Length: 214
Ligand SMILES: O=C(NCCCCc1cc2ccncc2s1)c1cc(-c2ccc(F)cc2)cc(O)c1O
Ligand SMILES: [Mg+2]
Image (cartoon, rainbow, N blue to C red):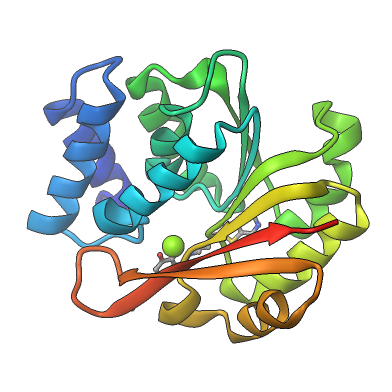
């Protein structure tokens, strides 16, 4: 049977990256996506912006919506202090299976909890099921039409505190117009746009960083 793109991406990691070396895993994926097959990882250019936000914040609790193959999961987990926790939600079981192996290859599995399911179903269960009260950082990279409803859901479930940071991928391409309008006009958020490009292309895209003001 034909392999899938995530399976070919995982093979490239297992072939070209060193076990236990997260940076080599990130490099191997970027090289695969630049030279062989495009894939919807946040990528190296936006990935550097992600790294700077994570490093500056030094979060102990992180929620990632949309794991895909685990590229941004590995980038974030690699920068977390000891005992910090990253919970990442993935809807597609095939993506989740690949991501688990990519995360394991990077040696960061003890910092990461990958949960399979839809954000709308899982977010209300996080406090009781995962022992997290609030998130210091949320990275939004899942269905673009779920960014706004899930942000409102996180507010309603008390998962955000004064100073929590929302960092959203793809606010230009594919685009999340209703989410952008909300975080840019709401008095409860202070937002900033980081102009960049769609992963591995020259197309404009960017990350929106929004601080929840409580
Ligand atoms: O759809 C994208 N990403 C979400 C995949 C949906 C996976 C989900 C995870 C999850 C977890 C929990 N609940 C529900 C869900 S749904 C995406 C697409 C492009 C793109 C850009 C230009 C193109 F021409 C074609 C694709 C670029 C990107 O960086 C993306 O992130
Ligand atoms: Mg994305």
